[in-house]
Image (cartoon, rainbow, N blue to C red; front, top):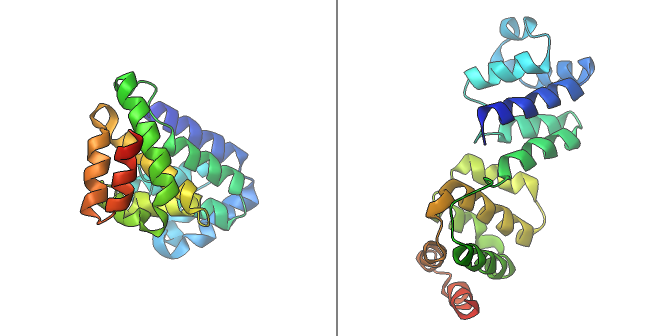
Length: 186
């Protein structure tokens, strides 16, 4: 995801927010950001820039903004930033064979992983912030949560993503039955 694309989504979100919603968001972050800083803010774009300067918002860290948007009852905008952050790169450099293997592995893992998805996510090297963002997107559907987790992992790995890495991570998490099922399907 390019910085231009990310800024474009932030601009869309800023333009879609009303003045009241901006004030609600400023109120929610009053303690963290400080009244003096917030008094100068006149648009969502300026607020998002402040979040970026404070390390609360970046291309790979959208959970803070997503949560704020849900708090001001703008689930549509929260979904926009969440969905943007999980889009895979157009050309990840994987062979068609490996892509197909990863798709099969994703399907099997999603069907069998259950509540252990965070453990697998950590083993695959995803940050706690990213795991929290995934959890917020699909709080009640464990199968979809697992799909989101594996999309994030594939995006982070790019051309380095390999089915063997998934199987090794499953075994490291003591999820041997799921690893066996993936190997059987491949």
